[in-house]
Length: 262
Image (cartoon, rainbow, N blue to C red; front, top):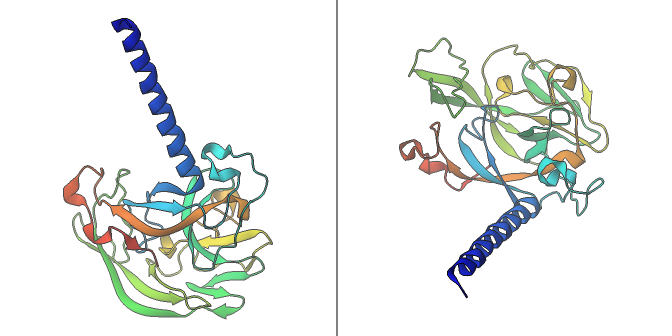
């Protein structure tokens, strides 16, 4: 065998290796776990900008949105199991097609309403216990360079940005922190929503800084999310960086590595 032929075969084998690696990675992403970076502060303090996690795609079964670009040839949902109230879920926005991550609050048939910043489910107020404040530095966060919103605004660069913190307890006992930035915020008082069959109602834990099911789709909100748009459940933060790049190791939040999501 001459050297030119050997080089050609070596190049072909390299291409095959790359192709198979991409196929295996694609199958892993489609069937098991999808990587997801947290780009915004809508789920603080449960999730921080710069958190990196894997979404468990086996949790609720599979739909067309389980594949990148919605290419799975699936009608409805297969191997599906119902999500639980309080799950932190990644889903496909019904209009924009972007991936969102929020907490599941309303199940099919539930009524949901916010009154004076308090969540009501099926006519009952959900308990909120004051639990101090959530404090972060007022500085640009993540690759988008967003500044956090502060209850104690205005805050100067590098100052302490605070938000009131409460522990909310859903029916069934699921507990998690929610934050408050302002009284009478844009979604502190809402109409009474009734969740349709086959749909779910989502909210961010950072209640005054989340565009979610409280806002209808015609003004950029999420509205009710169909079951087949759910991608998977977020269980743990695997890695976290407070900087604009994950390569900036001095900004890594080591206390959030493999951090369990409430």
